[in-house]
Amino acid sequence: MKHKLSHRLPLALLMALACSLQTGCGILSPLPLWELAKAGGAAASMAVSDAPGQATLTVQHPHPAVTQLCIAHNPDAQVADLLPSLQSELRKRQVASRIYEDGTPPTQCAIWLTYDAAFAWDTPPLVGQYRQVLTAASLTLKRSDGRVLASSQYAYNPSLPMARWSSTERKLAPVLDAVLTPPAN
Image 1 (cartoon, rainbow, N blue to C red):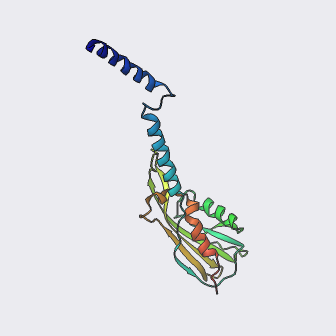
Image 2 (image 1 turned 120 degrees about the vertical axis):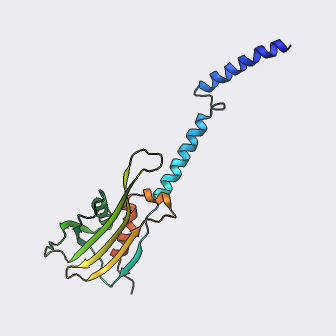
Image 3 (image 1 turned 30 degrees about the vertical axis):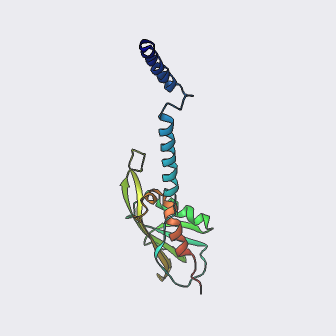
């Protein structure tokens, strides 16, 4: 009897190995569980990284609603997608915009948006390539005579580490809302 049992054990191991190599046999294979865990983690990190930024240090002075403005290009703020993100968010708010070199105010621009930004290079989770990340930005809305109408800032919040990977648009949206929205009387 001992001999028959020892003969069956290698056969059972062989069957378990064969079953684990089959795609339909997920009970014995840890790979589907690992893939599910990775997918769940990726989905959670994407959801957290898609969190919007937050406007801080906002100052507003009475001003009418803005429907068009000029953006003063800042060559020192070298965030690759900053200007396209700003213009995209302005279009969503039905605000027409044009970009001009700073210091060359055309007469048709009654309202100006100036900006400054800082960035870092870092690698997102589960990705092996460095990516430029917006870490701070300030927006200032001014009249053509230089009077400040509103200003606000975005700064990376280290207590929400995955928010670091939000898009530049998501980070700037609340800051843009803060400077474009006239203060309540």
